[in-house]
Amino acid sequence: MSYSVSPLNDVLSKYPEEHVSAVLSSFSCERDKEVELFLREKAIVQEKKQTSRTYLIFDDDAEHLLVAFFAVAVSIIKDEGLKCSSRMLRKMNINEGIAMSYLIGQLGKRDGGAKGLGTFAIERAIGIIVDANAKVGCRVIRIDCRESLIGYYESNGFTLVRSNKEGNLNLLVRIIETGSVPA
Ligand SMILES: CC(C)(COP(=O)(O)OP(=O)(O)OC[C@H]1O[C@@H](n2cnc3c(N)ncnc32)[C@H](O)[C@@H]1OP(=O)(O)O)[C@@H](O)C(=O)NCCC(=O)NCCS
Image 1 (cartoon, rainbow, N blue to C red):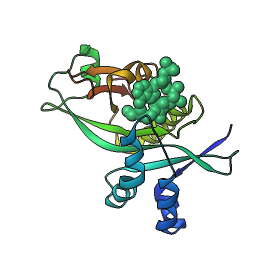
Image 2 (cartoon, rainbow, N blue to C red; image 1 turned 120 degrees about the horizontal axis):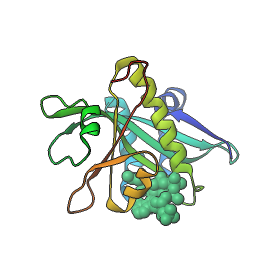
Image 3 (cartoon, protein in one colour; image 1 turned 30 degrees about the vertical axis):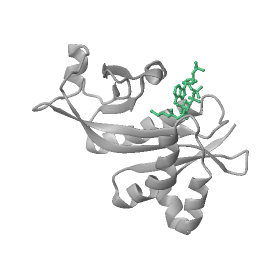
């Protein structure tokens, strides 16, 4: 399988918005309707407002079918209720109760998409964030998920640092371990 990743912003600069919108509306994700709704109704709005950047993953072997996507943004983490090692807390660079972070805000594959597409998307999202980190700093990546996906994100290198009783606002982080100067 061969996939290509296109920034939504680039796609919007090349094709009429109605056309792009129609492609996004063809994306279905029964497992998480919020993910589907984001791509269909919010991704273009947020792109224009510059509150997030969405990346589209196309299957090159299937007539460039839109098979998955992810969205990244910047965020903050309040230090309330964090349950993690002191090493992790130090790495999060908490200042006045707040850690700056990047956010993988949305992630989803099309119904029937190949197993492993999500991990491919996470790796690409992290690659984009690592580029931003090299230019502007900040080494924390956050992801929020429901309880059933905690293990999945842990197996993709994230650490659970806060969970809630409802099970839908679990916070996981991953630290970018790059740079020549250890800290
Ligand atoms: C999450 C996702 C991107 C992972 O894709 P992937 O890397 O190809 O991996 P899989 O689809 O095999 O999913 C990994 C595991 O998570 C489970 N899972 C995936 N989405 C889930 C969901 N919404 N709720 C509960 N479990 C879910 C899968 O059943 C699978 O479990 P298994 O390993 O026991 O079979 C993809 O499954 C997806 O698009 N899910 C629906 C949207 C979603 O939940 N996005 C995450 C929002 S935080």
